Length: 114
Length: 114
Image (cartoon, rainbow over all chains, first blue to last red; front, side, top):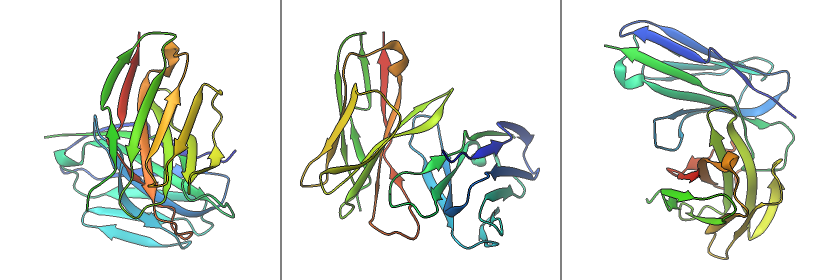
């Protein structure tokens, strides 16, 4: 069973601060996604990273895929209250044949205070 | 383009009853996956359907079952409900693209078992 360990589990910061969320595994993933989920809603895809060492930027969010494709990080610059939510990483196992079965991390609950 | 639609959004059942949840995927998506989300376990994979065939199943008891219809709509059923089945049940659809494994989630069906 491939596991994704996400840290930290909880993050409470003030508006304007920077933060980083980590997603680590001992297994290789062919791709890794980051999702954001708000209460009462389903997760919404933020980004997909596919290539080892890849860095993608989405406004104030920077996503990185590790060189060995076993880990990823999400960095938010100058966090805003609107960034509050549950952040989930999810990996597509390398060599798998399923399109829908992703392995999810436990999630990071981010709260940004005004 | 309509998103993934899940019905009902909320439901309350008692132990021993059974429940059926419905999911309509994004038009053109042929893969439908189901996940159970609880505070303690996070998102856990239930099963995945493609072309009316179950292609993957997670580690859940046989009380959990599902099916997919020719129009790609899917249903999942839980029989003999237990208190621990209380959760948010998420349906996700995806294109049949091997490279990214991106999922598009519905808003979920919140099941409470009393």
